[in-house]
Length: 104
Image 1 (cartoon, rainbow, N blue to C red):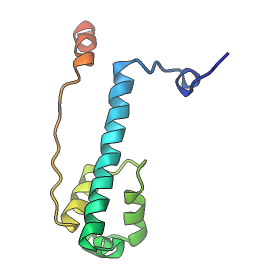
Image 2 (image 1 turned 180 degrees about the vertical axis):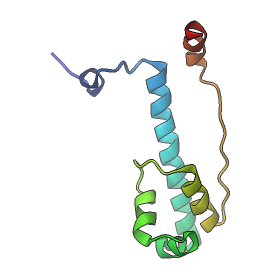
Image 3 (image 1 turned 45 degrees about the vertical axis):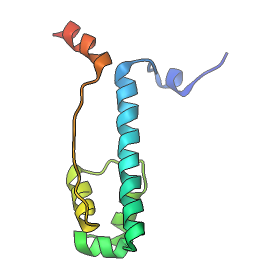
């Protein structure tokens, strides 16, 4: 018998909520990678960013490691420290519309 992480964790990988959560996680990781690439392209160090943000270099390093869950405010401060603006957007998840209507 073959087990997957999803089956062991007890969730259905075909569930649109799981798919949306995975995409959200990927989007956050891609955003952080984009910010880090911009910082490096500008020749700005983590210490420079930390000084501008009023935090420590180790806090900036933790933020730059994908997998965390930084606040929107922290991401905005980081973006401003490297001369960028964070733009937030929301879009509907088509697969969840039927679930939402059914539960209403």
